[in-house]
Length: 336
Image 1 (cartoon, one colour):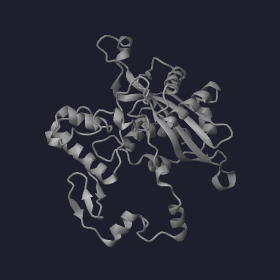
Image 2 (cartoon, one colour):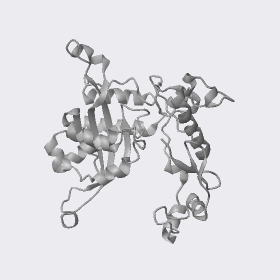
Image 3 (tube, helix red, strand yellow):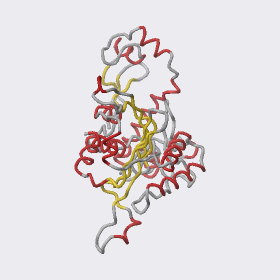
């Protein structure tokens, strides 16, 4: 989708065309430098500026993508423009960035140009490996279909996690979830979840996942809400576990895909009927603040932030997919 970014001189340029859409101004230079508040357009307060100065930038990004040297399509062939590349080379380039493999050359060329422009401006390449080896960080060969219970899937995911040290964040999340499940701390009874779970405000879901589907042709957070609301039986498992001695909750949820079918289940359906829909497993780690009966009308707590997350059905597992907010909407219904 089209977006606007700054060039080195604070001119606003289009990621679609690379052309200047608005010349630099004193305010755009301040905005680019981070010296003014993006909402009020006024200078930061002294206290806020001190907090920002103490931030360590590298700690704001957690790289969970695959290593560039292992990815086909990380770069275009040397000295080749997008127009000079073959369709497969363009597709490899897009796939390495989480894009679609089914795209025509006519549509691929402008998409590749957008990525090239953004990467040039930011100096950052976030790559993913959609076809990793069995020991890869995506655990791509773990079967999350309806044929297997959550316990079996977690067991297989942990085995894969033990074979790689590429992504300790994902490994630790899977390990923690597995241990909580083994300890019997997950509760998947609707009434119990509704009775003990912290309050989940819809604003937190929008705040966390509002960037999904920036293009009108993409599935977005609204689609996730509608599907969860009108297709309640799409969920095959939903449980939560309170992490002992912390203010953290792990949500473990398994649901049917909206369209994709699981070819492994073809024998399970009658003749001339399509296979069963694919299923995906989502793990979400949430933190909550304590509440009290006087100020908040309840003492269950309120969710305040999404921490680690993993989706077994999507690129890199850590990406911002529609499945994660959909599972949060499902949790939201337990509160409402």
